[in-house]
Length: 238
Image (cartoon, rainbow, N blue to C red; front, side, top):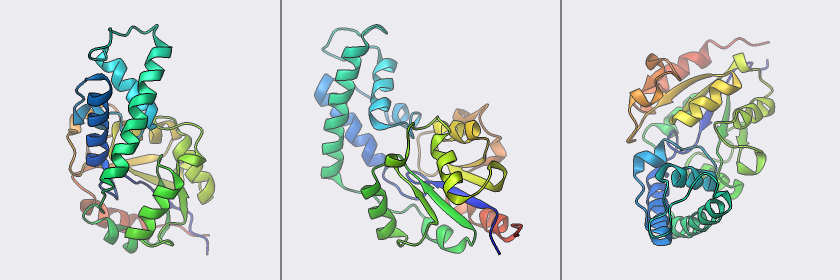
């Protein structure tokens, strides 16, 4: 009988802990390229946005580029050029770091859930497949959505709608597991119920105010295991 409900997991920050290394790479690249200081919190608030778009938003937030003259909203070409330079340097730095690990409880969560499972990430397919094979096993997810599958990143609903289509489910038949405000916005824009796992993050519950009910925010990935197992056990079937 066909399973008619599923769970859509964000990858980084929910199942895999690579975000601190992404942060370090962005901070180093921004400092080296244009001498600006970016905080972890600045980056986490934009997590889920495509890399170069994130850097562009960080620059807009800073409103200056260190030793380069102040940028106005009209300097879009210069902003794009600087964002591209920072992003390209960031990718090289991150490749040198090449560090990630499964978040505590993630392996147990994925292996213990017996309904449709999708993983969504804006990262390249090669990177996503490598992480899945290394930590969870190549058949752990029914559907995998990577950056190559997406026309727009979060907060667009495109990532989660793409997953739904591939899973053969409707909005009411899935739950998204996220860890960042932009991811929650993307789930909301897609019309899919969402829960949040904070894990080890500089974000606070108050950063999600107006986006999600506070009772849907869990302290970490381990704490959602029983909730999602119960959700799967009660799934209707055809």
